[in-house]
Length: 244
Image 1: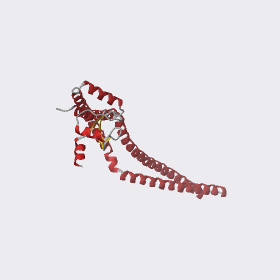
Image 2 (image 1 turned 180 degrees about the vertical axis):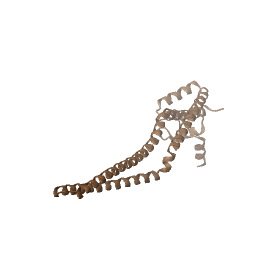
Image 3 (image 1 turned 90 degrees about the vertical axis):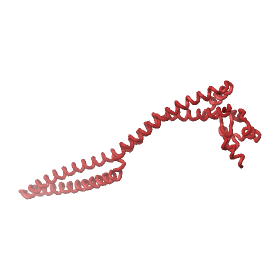
Image 4 (image 1 turned 90 degrees about the horizontal axis):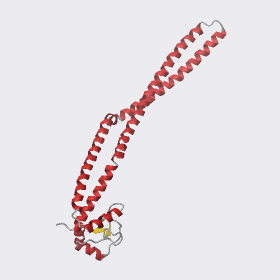
């Protein structure tokens, strides 16, 4: 039959696990939203790159249209130049032709810039092709795994809560009351603290040698002189100490 101290240790471990599970479940909605946002940021960055490429192609098409129109105007100006009847008509046709040619040259430079921009976008998209192709499936898989973990946590919480009740009802009322008071008073819910390196693991206060001896040799309830939590030494720690 388990001693009261063993039951308290088991109860503390169960309560610590329950706190962890509750925290995980309570933050699930926020964590799921963060996970979705992370994938949305990846998708958004890809859409921005694709939109940049589409805009460059559209701008290039518009520039080429302007070039074609200006070349039509140049042909008309050339005809005017050939058919000029006087010096004034000749000079006017020359100025128009020169201005149109300069404009076409500037537009062609812009076309080259848009072609370069399009090539850069296509290169980036090619480098991220694997990411783009698997993004949706990766998102679905990640959310599926998240939902499975959440379901498992809920099931584990239900089992842990039942286990806690089974252990708690076997404690004497006075011990149960002390445990509840210590757990509720503590911010981290720790009422039973393990002794680690001869110190209370909750408040880190060094234990007197006599108290350490009592903890190793007795099943009695012994509390920390600093934080009043119930103390225990794990069998593994005790065995290692004896070997040393």
